[in-house]
Structures are given as C-alpha cells and as structure tokens.
Length: 428
Image (cartoon, rainbow, N blue to C red; front, side, top):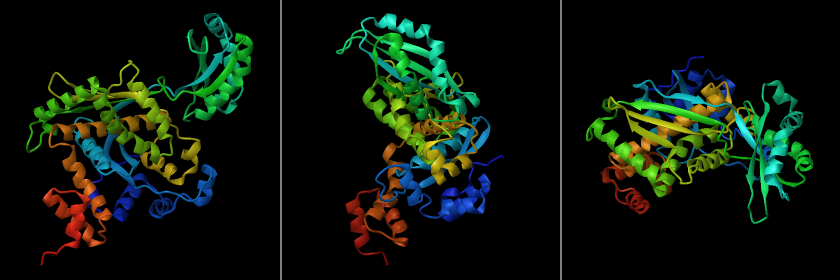
C-alpha cells in the first residue's frame, strides 16, 4: 500500500498522537497499535527463550524517521536508539532530499560466505586445486543440509579457496562457501553448511579442518544509496548553498584521507543504520563488523561515503557497504516489535531492508557533515540533548520544558548549570 512519510508537524505532537498517525499511515490494526503503545511488548517468557540467564528486559526509545522517499516509494523508518539528534537529523536530510527526488538505491544478491579453515598441509596450492576439482560435490553436500532454502531459490552457489602459504603454524587454506541465503541474515545457514562439508574437505586435502563459520565481511552482499542536493536546498540564513556544499566536501575529504576522522565519520553513518537494524531485530554487531572491515579493505581505514560536486553544482552523495540483514529467523522472528517495525516500513525482501538502512546512513552522514560545515555539531545536538540533561538534573513534569528553554537561552548545557537553575529562584 502507498504510505505518506512526510509526517507534518510530527515533532509537536504527543507520543500518543504520533503513534496514532503512524498506525494510520502504516495500516496497523488496534492490536498492533496496543503492542506499540504498551510497555513490555517483549514478554519475560519470550526474552527467556531468546538468550540465557535472563533476569528482565531493557527498553530503549523507539521513534520513526519521516520524509524518506526511496526509489520513488515513501517509507516511514522505525529507529531504536538512545542518542538525541539522530532521528531529527535523518528526517530533516530526508526532507531536503525529496526536492531532488529522494534516495535511489540498489543492492547485490544476498550472498554470504562460510569459511572452512584447513591446517596441517604441506602443499596448500595443491590442496586448493583439489578442493576446486571437487567443488560440485562439496556444493551438493552443503545444499543437502537445507532443502527449505533450496526450495526458496537459495543455496550454496560456489566455492572459492584462499591460500596462506606462510603462517606461524605453517601453510593453511580457507575454503569459502558462497551461499545465497535469500531473506535470512544467514549465519545459522552458512555455519551449518560449513560443518557439513568439513569431513569431506579433510579427506580431499589430507589436512585438518579447524574453523567452520561465516564471515561478517559480507562483501558479496552490498547495498548502495545515492542522493542529490541542490545549492538552493542547502542554503541557510548564514550560509549560501555553495558554501555548505564546499564545507561538506572538505569535511568528507578529511575522512577519506585521515583514519582518525574516518572513525568518527563512519560512526555517524552507523548512527543512522544501527537504529534501523536494532528496530528490526537484526544483528547490529554483525553489520558494524562488516562495515568497518569494508572501510579498511584498501589497507587503510577510510570513509564509507563519497561526497562530490556535480557539473551543475549539486552535491552528490553515495554509499556502498555490506549489509547482512534478514526478514526471517532470530529476533526478527521472535520480537513482536521487530515484526511491527518491518510492517511499518512495508518491506518485501531483505535486500529492500538493506537498501533502506544504507539510505538512512547516508542521510545521517549528510546531517552531520552539514552541521560541521555550518554552525558546528554541538549547537543542534546539545539543544536536542537538553531534555536528557534536564531529566538528569532532577526536573519533572512542566519543569523539564522550562529548564530546557533556560539552557537553550543561555547556550549552557552543563548538568551543574541545570541543577543550579532548577534549584534557584524562579522568575515571578
């Protein structure tokens, strides 16, 4: 169904009013509305089945980013995160992006790698060729362990072998099973396949198999996003659009050449991506690991995004990175709010979810670079962070908004200042 992601005046609404608007836009029924509205959607019983040694549940704020238009489709994006300014920045940059047609995305197929490490061999290159000679046999053996995946059109597609001729433990090789995991993240599937071929690989190579596990560097499972901003769109009261664009590009270039800046730059990208991954019950640690490994694939850690100036002066941003996410299995299947998050986004495949996630990451990166290129990162961030400071200082009820305004007026966001104001004399 068609969704309107513009969410006008959303920030000024109460949480209850926001929820009602999102439920209406996403076509959620009364029971789904109640799940999102009530505390403790994740029951203790369900939580106890998800991990070990459970003693309770831990809640984080769940929000939605509006204004996203991706490949011509409006998308309301659920985000679970504790840090202020993230949702606001992503939504605002998505709003500006709509002027230029929104975000355009693409992705490769859902291919994951399973690694099978072989040690105790004296002829690693010969062992590699022996495995490749028996590749079809090994692929068939791997696929025999997951008939359901085969029925869905997935399965082991290929085998690659890497040779490490000189390690402190002697020569070793690593066979990569290349597996199409369809709409799953795929960890359990590829791990099972790696286990299934281990004994046969030992017979073929004469070596000993050690590790049998997926790689989180999902460099065959890439998601991409592209966005374009005109100078007119980016102009502010203090800065022309051309000045903003030049500042964004110069800020990006530092991340491209300096790993100290790149670490913070890419963290900002993940500020947008991780909340989407968490909201949908996916493995954000796997996505983080893949992202940072991919950022260092040249041998030097660098930016995951690229920002350029088009011939007509527009700012063009792109991102390409691994994105191993799924719609089935794990917490995505068991957590009730993860299922609702997917319903709100109206995604039809894991690839579509991956593309939404990288579009949000690109928007988030643009929000940070725009702030750095203009008023600085702290002004907007600390204004939004003021509510946290007010609550931490002990403000309750109507005092929260009053204290926030005092901090904004004074441009002083220290906790000791907030406590001093809260406990001091009030204006008549």
